Image 1 (cartoon, rainbow, N blue to C red):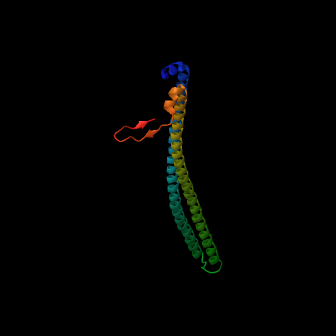
Image 2: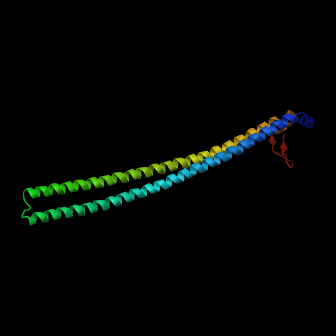
Image 3: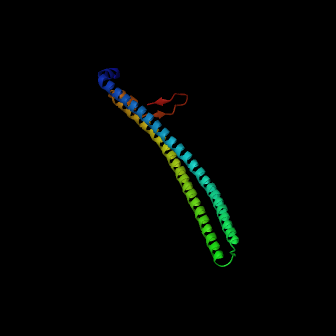
Length: 198
C-alpha cells in the first residue's frame, strides 16, 4: 500500500524533494557567505592589531624625538646665552643689574619652552597610545564578531538542512511519513532479546 501511495503522490513528492534540495543549496550559500564574513572580520581584527602595534611604536618614537629635541634646544639656548654673556663682557658690562635681569628672563623663557616641548611630546605620545588601545579593543570586538558569525553560520546551515528535511518529508504520502517522522519509541531488550523499535 505504501508503494502505491508513493507512486500516486509522485509529482508532489518530486516537487517537495526539489524544494528541499533548494533549501540545502540555500544552506550551502549561507555557509559560503558566513565563511567570507568570518574571514573578513578576522582580517580586520588582524589589521587593527597591526595598526595598534604601529601606534605604540609611533608613541615611543615621539617620546625619543621629544627627548632629543629638548636636549638640542637646551644646548642651543645655552650656547646663545653664553655667547650673549661673552659679548657683554667684551663690551665691559658686568653680570649685575639690567643684564642680570635680562639673563634671568631669557633663562625663564627657555625653561618654559622646554616645558612646552616636553608637554607637547607627552600629549602626542598619549594620543598614539590611546589610538593603540582603541585599535586593540576594536580587534577584540572584531574577533568576537567573527566567533559569533561562525556560530550563526553553523546555526543557519543546520536550520536550512532542517527546513529541507522537513520539506522533503512533508512531500511523502501519509503512510510513509508516519514511519519516518513519528515518535521513536525504543524499549530495552527483554532478557536475551533484541531492541524493540516501535
